[in-house]
Image 1 (cartoon, rainbow, N blue to C red):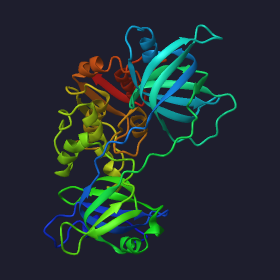
Image 2 (image 1 turned 45 degrees about the horizontal axis):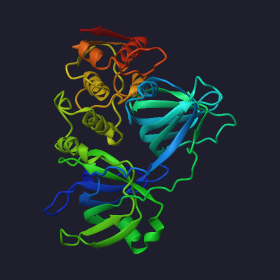
Image 3 (image 1 turned 180 degrees about the vertical axis):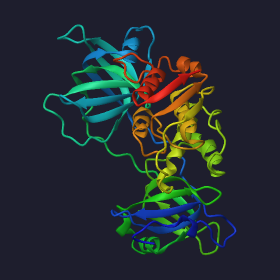
Image 4 (image 1 turned 90 degrees about the horizontal axis):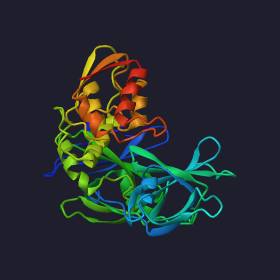
Length: 397
């Protein structure tokens, strides 16, 4: 189907002895879709990204804060890691470029030669260049953040970063194998003339056991090879050159296996997982882009949040989504997304009452997680304050 949405139900079954588990769908600029193929299996969906090579960088004229300050205050503990450090390049008003220093480690430090109250800090790290849409300002300054991706805290600021602007080669893409694929006409055309699809992208739709979309991931349509399928018949096994960057980790397999049985219908099924597993759970709640538009937002009434298992930031958002909309539903997965959801369009909008049972569990667990180091409030306190400012009556039990 082209010029409209692909009807999943029309393609989720076939007359074969293996089920359809994946659909390959391309979307055009107008939002129209067409089916490129359907598959019984995929190899290479779960991969950890290959880390970039280690580099040595120097933070010049640095005023350390947070974790970085703690590390410098313990010179006898070496080497001590900072985790991933985000470097934001600011103009006078806002960040315009940013990098992630992966698994950053302080190698050495010394007082800055011009400003003795500052430091030159040598780091070892892998460097990943994130999207930045603006040119560098004439007089940039550099803000540093360390911590988790959902609750990074300030690590200081500096006047320059030696080695940051080096030219780096893009990592080689990791391929994806479509196993037992029944190509539709666009994919058959790409197999006949593969160069036509070298720059094209599509979505790999992952189906649950009921034939509903449980996740989607962008994949490149450049074909490296095709051969008769190991499943026999007229099916084909196809190698896509680039399986995309947005792939789940092998550690996420148990979460995906649970969702393969269908969207959760009971609360707290996310609770046995660690923070990473809960983050993967939240990722699957965002499947809603393939689901029909929600009913109008409702407000008023009381929602009850079961706080017994809120021991980390992903757990808070899992519990919050369940309290407001039910199991497996999306209502933000980190601070900014949660704030956006409170503005409407996601099924529930203030005013309403939120009764937070066992709230002390989250208060204690998130006491050291700061969303905004400037005001010193914990992530839990910030969430409560945000709710109240948006018109929610929060009752802590």
